[in-house]
Image (cartoon, rainbow, N blue to C red; front, side):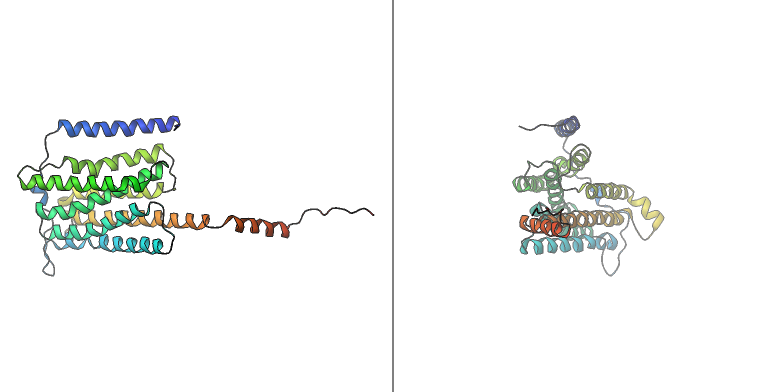
Length: 289
């Protein structure tokens, strides 16, 4: 039977409240079609025969970061030292890699059909991140058991929207839940529950940079007006990629160090204690004649 502290009970209440409010909003709201104005970005400058060049090229960090961390995770797996939540981390950074490719493809020719390949890997990445957060804060939750169902929900959310768009009645509501609900619930997890992996700092850095990236996205035109050569949207890509880089660096290095510290065999610890005892012997017994 699970027992919770008062702080954790408040956290569970807030998680339930946020979930119920999100579901209620989904039920009472009308279907949300994709606004075609979304595809009109402030910076459409062409360089090297690349349309919307900086919005395309600013996705390169996602590709480099995703590939680098996927390589790191696979190397550790092959060496017999996988990190905790290995598959969730793997799919997070596979998603990151394909976000770079899909987003570059979309920004080269922005329209609803190319947007599918931007949103599909994003949905996979958001769900993988949510799995890591849940598993880190609830020891009873095994990431392998919830990873595939949540990734399936993420893929379905994009497929549902795309199919609706093809019929002229697109609905983004499920996709919006997939992207924003985890980002609302993760801060509650961080504030009200103990983190089993000590990765609170990594999550806060990622969340902070996510908010900053969204800020630049909303101010796309204003930023482009003041900076001329850069737009808010291209900076958004760079800031979001930076968040994923620091999240991977802080969590994977930390988990690797933890695994190394736990790798020592009990016999080694026993031998170490013997060596320490031999260097500091106790008071010898006095023998009587």
